Image (cartoon, rainbow, N blue to C red; front, side, top):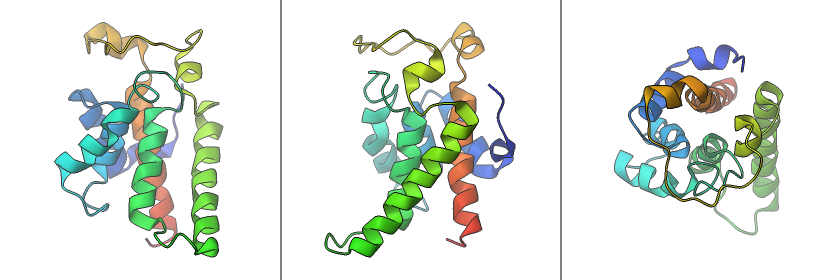
Length: 158
């Protein structure tokens, strides 16, 4: 997988480092943005803990994408349920981030990006070995998601 300039940013590198320390993909992205989200790091990574491995290792929506969306919501989401303009604006933001991510990777679905045949109902996480890191694009994907969100926020002075 070829990754773009987004990985060269501070948040991208921070998210990759968190992933390499053992945090799941969603936790790595959210952890990199914990301060901007107004959250303590521990609370932020606990919030994101269910979304690793494509949501509890089900290999559905990529955890890095879910983490990017969670961070975007905490940083620039809406809270008034009847504010349809704010809701629309935020959904447009999320759809734009998803489209940018998909343009780089071809998908936002974990199993598709990993080339897996179907869902994985085994809850046991993969051991983080040297072999794991050699065959998985996950560190780069985590960096891509964090870098994209950082770039988006910078573009809009948020």
